[in-house]
Amino acid sequence: DAKTTQPPSMDCAEGRAANLPCNHSTISGNEYVYWYRQIHSQGPQYIIHGLKNNETNEMASLIITEDRKSSTLILPHATLRDTAVYYCIVRVRNSWGKLQFGAGTQVVVTP
Amino acid sequence: GAGVSQSPRYKVAKRGQDVALRCDPISGHVSLFWYQQALGQGPEFLTYFQNEAQLDKSGLPSDRFFAERPEGSVSTLKIQRTQQEDSAVYLCASSPNHLTSPNTGELFFGEGSRLTVL
Image 1: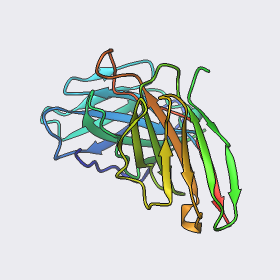
Image 2: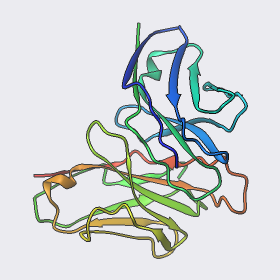
Image 3: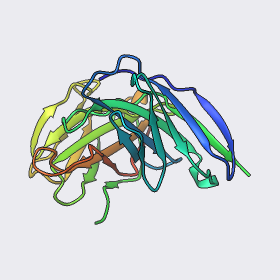
Image 4: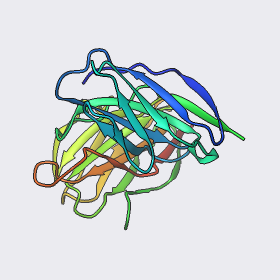
């Protein structure tokens, strides 16, 4: 699975949009981009995934560049409960393939 | 239960002791994963089961680590002769059968078992 690069940390004001970047320049054509987050003392939680089209669900939006070499996770209205480590992962969907986590981005939402 | 359940949540062991960590996956989930997460780092893959078959154990750090899932449901991760470097959170995750049912590729994680070796 391709490696990803994320900034180690970022701050966001409560109520504002949080835009989390991820670079995955070596992504293959059959690899999807997945986002998970891990709130302190909990296990990772799935957020969203996509292949090449932008995706939106009740938690977030995922914007993937046309060349698929980078993506941005958008939390539209950050709340204090969104404070967590966010992981960007690329893998082949519906393979058994293990998720390979990097260090992620520590997001701190401030009042 | 509704989610992946792990026990114990916290375990303190003296160096050299054996420990066993239990994982109850979501009912009906075929795939089961174990991860190790050291303080301040992302989870690292340890091993994977499809039903009772252990298909990948490439992430197990040494032969002191052993995992089993004898009936294709509950899994146990055993660590023999624990060392201080084994101190970490051990996460279990499960997933439906991706080969026969619609699947986002999502893994469902438990809250983990925190092991501290003194």
